[in-house]
Image 1: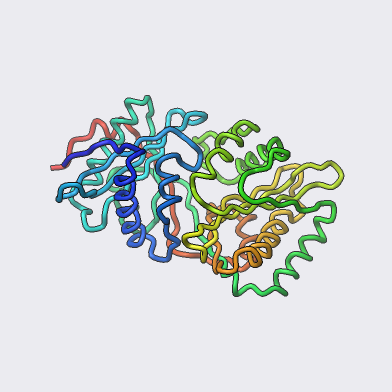
Image 2: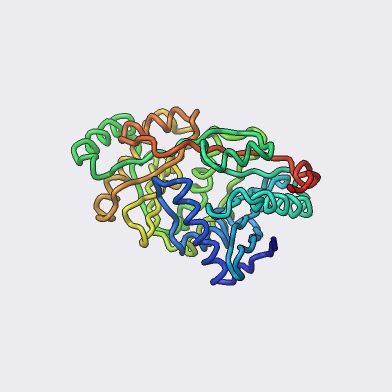
Amino acid sequence: MRIKQVDLADADTIRACFEVFLVAQQADEPDGPFFTERPFRGWLTTGWGGNPREVWLAEGPAEGTVAGWCLLELPDLENLDQTELTLVVHPAQRRRGIGRALLKHAATRAAEHGRSVLTAPTRLGGDGEAFARAVGAGQGLVDVQRVMDIRATGDDELARLRASAEEKASDYSLVSWTGLVPEEFIEQAAGLFAALNDAPHDPETAPAVWDAERVRERVNDLRPLYGLRIYSIAARHDATGELAALTEVAVDPADPGWGHQMLTGVTRAHRGHRLGLLVKVAMAQWLQAAEPELERIDTWNAQSNQYMIAVNEALGYTILGRPGSWWKLDVATVVLSEPEL
């Protein structure tokens, strides 16, 4: 089996990796939503957070085909001991040692970069979990995917929820934008992104440190690469002008029936005013008008994040598919392991 590095400027090879990913995703996550090619290309080559990366593929039995591939993301601002791994094997090529070969190669590369830990996500109850357990990975937080059928939530119900939230949030007004974070909000947006650090997370993983420059470089500079329509609504404290809450949803023009929740955060000083519910209800109302083909919005929450789960359930979100989890694996253990015969 030949494993070779992918040139991230090679459009044909990136497309081949996308095709393998899509088949694997349809097998492992049949309820969707599924990546389309342009956002996949942006994610694979640059990433949601702009971390340095390498992609390696395992060639298939026929020349020029891809049996599987792995992405190594190498955080360069925090968690310098870690490598975030995505490992994908075509369903027809599984249980032939390809996953283990890619894993060992990824661990070797991680060690060469001075990393000691591999982290990787999988759905529970499928091939991904079975593989993670077989190689000795330790399970971390459990995340649950939920979906809102925006067509089933009537205008009257959204209006009732918004009125209920506004009673507690009478000292706040809403501001909105599409696409990039406006320069006038860059400084405060850093605090809103940082608010996510209070959500349940692995205690051994350092939270992201946000400032205005990081928002410019790791949010605004990257968003045009994905080809998504991104909607943002923030709650602003009337007395101080502070942005207190933010929610963002992306819609892929190639698959406009799905909306993808990106983040919802409320700064610590302004919690207790139902701002999370307020901005999410306002977002649903906005999207109903702005995206007439939109049918569903999906979101992920840590199983232990009871506050945000309650907000989502009030909006009618229900569980979609199997839960997921992040796994951790010691790099040295993999590098020193005996090859599979």
